[in-house]
Image 1 (cartoon, rainbow over the protein chains, first blue to last red):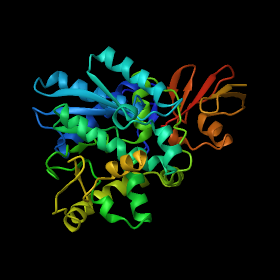
Image 2 (cartoon, helix red, strand yellow):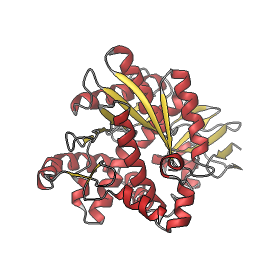
Image 3 (cartoon, rainbow over the protein chains, first blue to last red):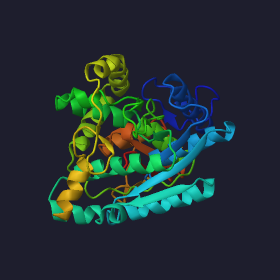
Image 4 (cartoon, chains in turn blue, red):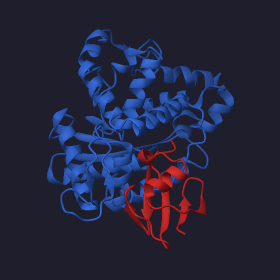
Length: 303
Length: 64
């Protein structure tokens, strides 16, 4: 029975073993997102927030909650951005879900495609470059999200990254001995890092993937299982399966990982402080070296 | 016997189990990464199954 109202429960919270009904869970979930926003100072009153959406449950959940927040805060503006990488039988399906959702909620949705911006779809790039598709996709998506959000007037770029995503990233970086990358994680990243760099916020930081999926189901956002054809063999999937097995055996492990990471994050940020600012010689976007990774890929495509 | 539909695999099975927890165990599915509905309503692992129940098992993991 639900801990608070003694009706049928829809979820048992993994970290605390508390059972909640649909109404109490929805309140718990939204309250926790708002608390995360306050705790980590993710949003200022007059911000324009661009929400990166894919049409999947995570991004529609955060878009829905931020739109709800904007109803109570007049100066807060919410818009949505979607990057169409050009992945056959995958992105074309989720785009429709995002368009339907934004139309219903009256949220402006801006769509940019790899094909139009770079001349090739991801499917075409993979054939031409013979590189790991997840690497190409990650670099070009981040590039477009930052550039286009800035042009749309964003103060922050919000994403649907949740506790599971973050705990996977932390462990991946540990296993690859890449703590410098971990220093760039956390609920808010890129604050005043570079001119032209839009800080990224993760309001679902303390919510698990199962909690997010439960919220999306109860709100009747589309929950179709559509799998990216490139995702099967990536390192992240193995880490995800490992963490999920571990969580099942030792409940609360993912929360433990996140909270211990948050304790050491200030030290990591201090150690890997970026002092030298670079702007890509080719596109003038902020980057870590003379020519940004996106321009390197574009150059290879055109050669 | 309850009918169980697996959304990811898109297949339907008849499986005898007393609870959702027992059902997931029989299917070797990790309860932390699946949502389960019975007759369209979301339930927890403690739900006691009845003969005519229609069960759907949905993965929470996005495919991206």
